[in-house]
Image (cartoon, rainbow, N blue to C red):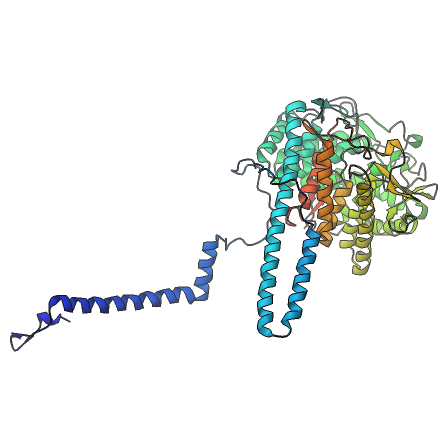
Length: 596
């Protein structure tokens, strides 16, 4: 339609208002049309649910195509720089997470009571509860991250000292700034490098991981002389290499593990297939320890090879490895067992027990652990391991689980000639986590819960051995005697060599029960280690946990990086970082995958 000032009537122009007035009116009409158009478009965009949701997610940076929980471990060649460590804001001990949870529960209870009188009030209180809980969770998340970063910083200190002063050697002397090697390794093979590999990877220390990976590829040889422990070489080296392969799928690790396992196979050449304790990697000669009763093999050593050899057979397709360890286990299954228990010494030629000492500490410990873990790792298809484990747990409960004189503490006694002693090793503190893992995977829910509770009681006793020392670190062994419970009695029991077993049980029980006290206890242990064990270039064991200032022994054990720091880090990590239903840890804390 033409504007009125261009219209005519009978050839005569129609009189109209001035041009300025007409344009103002038209501008107003156009403006109103534009506003209406914008309103309709915006409303359609904002109020259509799918569009709104998509837009909100876009603004929040969410990935609609990947909302599943993933293993939070990027590959080693990811284009990321090494993590840097922000300084801790304070050395003060944080408020107890357990107390914070109690405060929230109290707030929620009070809000619910007040809200019962009025629906509007209840809605308001519910909103307040949600806000309070959200704030608490955010605060807790920040505190947990700060602790996790602190553990990572401990790992960085340990690793840097080793790289600088002992690179390529087995272990580090962190005070004298030199290398160290125990006789169990036979020769120098970079034990700390192999033991630390998966910890570096899990912590996201990828530059360090690459340096270690390159050293293994170029320098790790198995030609040295000397007698090496078949057990230690298996759990640290074969286990460490296979774990690195499982995490990265780098064939170099698998090939090195296979090469080393082949070097160990001559130790199995006995009448029963029960391996001897030591192997010369150059000559293949093997024998048992001279100090072992009657030249016997040791239960913990012969029974702690199954996870590594079974997984090696799976990834190589070569049955010889798993067949070797199955032969050992089949013999142990069939042999007569006193009270259903397994003594620690067995003759590899006759296949008979050499003594009747039974312990879940040194010489016996990890045999039991590998029964339940073999069952779990097989995807619960290994019925032999299942039966052996749950049968022996009942015998342990009947003959070895005891109460302290005060009846307050539960512990696992040693049996000597069938008679229980009140002594318990720090090594046996893994039992709390083992019972919890067994309980979680028990087909009978009621019995499973009982085993988890028993594991928690034993772990509490191990925790008591920590808090009853001057350093707040547990000794190598402790007793449960009248007036002296959860304390070491003799000088050769009072040392601490950076062992992980108590912290391991904290980690497993945290994952299974979600009780925040395990994180509190783990953090206390980490702070005590930091205070008393930190040395110039790493961390050292201490000679007496009851003396302050502590005297250090100047040895950084390779398992400190493999186990103690890994379990502490995972204690403060999300459950989808090495989840317990997808991975099992060998006795050196090297994770191996569960069969689908």
